[in-house]
Length: 326
Ligand code: CDT
Image 1 (cartoon, protein in one colour):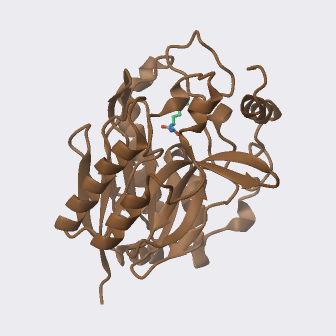
Image 2 (image 1 turned 120 degrees about the vertical axis):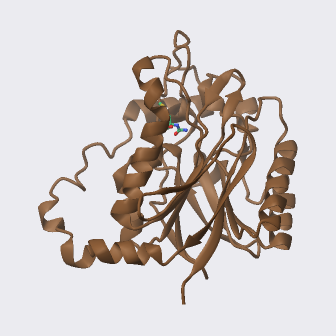
């Protein structure tokens, strides 16, 4: 019997710096209600779905930045979202900023959670490919200081077997890396869900501006086909605190085709009834077990590139310990 799962990207328009988390949660709840009305069973919210994308600024006030983070999920502010989603039987992926106590110290990650249709937390993911810089450079028209505020994710790429499909998570920049998808596909993922905050323009690399949407789609379309995956990708979109974010929230089939695409830069539900069995169908075409040649892939797991630079790690620790900026 065919397995169908109706999923939706739950795109968000801009969230400004002054917006409370409680007000954003009301927008998320509105999207959950719409999903329920349209028979959607699982929605994907963006990366850092509760706040503005603050890494675009160097912010000296650490307490103000810390207020963007949550130590528990559900947190007091997001509990109404979890309750409403469970009442409506809509599962979800939610990106948020995680404050965790580990090894006797506080650590901060760019994270996401997967929640089933009963409101039960299935698992957590911490962004592996943290992009940008750790040094404040006020001369730049647009900064991207994720490496200052977040440590690298340390949970790998877990996948979660649900009643409808095996699902893995990624966050924004992870979608540009083939290793993200292949790691999860080898663990049996049939669906990869991800949220993003991607600048619509690159002021210091303007010849890329016209290609922003193309690059966003091309990496996911090829990954979906090469790994036999459904991909649901959800944007924080539109002009946020004076900076433009890419829209193009989408659902991509294991054939590589874009089967649903957002048409606005605002809060928008982008649903599609997905035939999950297309995933094993495309996987059987590639037949990893028979045709992969790991003996010929020397270097793929070499240490090169997989160590966060000492300077980035120190800048992040110094920032949160309250020392002078780099
Ligand atoms: N949020 C996020 O990961 N954004 C990155 C931009 C990196 S530009 C230094 C992205 O891949 O869209």
